[in-house]
Image (cartoon, rainbow, N blue to C red; front, side, top):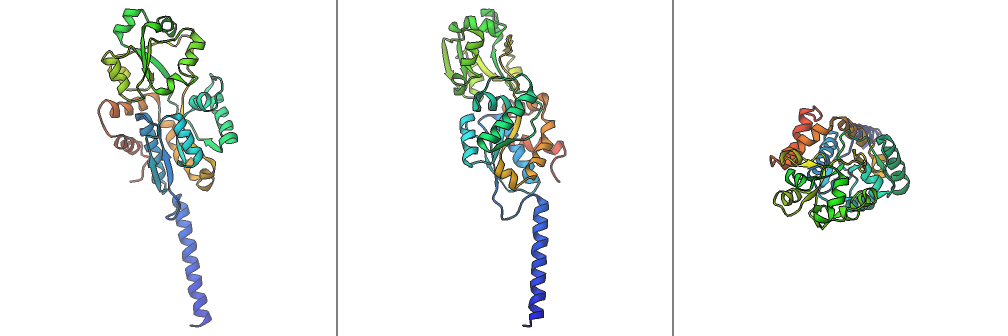
Length: 305
């Protein structure tokens, strides 16, 4: 084979390789690149949002490995620091209070600025654009319990706590935005019993069945309306704003900058009403969270046909 023929073949192969690289780059990922590992915590809203993140990334050409239902905040935080996942949905004030152990902040923009700066310095993680919905914590009772004990506010509840059985996630007993912080702000808040019931439907079933008197809720939970519960007034504004956003490893984002573009498109669409409706489809209607997530993205025109 002549040197001219070899040179021509080499040139064609080089050009083909360069073209392939450009095509893969334009797709946002490469056929040989490691998958983006998307995690979520252990309740329906996290499953739905985490699945949306996964679908948005696949839509941009990334390979995705799903790791839903990791557990609570400490488990998810440990997983992303270790590199077992590359990103997951987290709440701004959970990052502020539970992970960074800082005092509550009222201004959502300041909350974001604080967690973004501190996560980058301490953990080499970054926060992308938050969604506007506020899934803050709350405490709810049945109408019968509210009437029986004369409870309308957290101050009322603090005074009656010793007569009442509380139920909620295990974290509620230890987190600063749980029973400890409530006791500091309101006084009292020593329940007759505190049952660990997780963040799923079991806690609502326990309230409905009379096994507990007070349930820890997320304010976008679908069953608050369907079970006609009374969400007590946080009369000293203990709970701050909890906006959800993707938390991403910085090394992953540096290698795959299109992750931010893909996920930031979704952020503004997730309002209080939207997320409550999606939660209802899963928790009340019994639909699969992956089906609900995809249907929403399709209806919003965010997925390629």
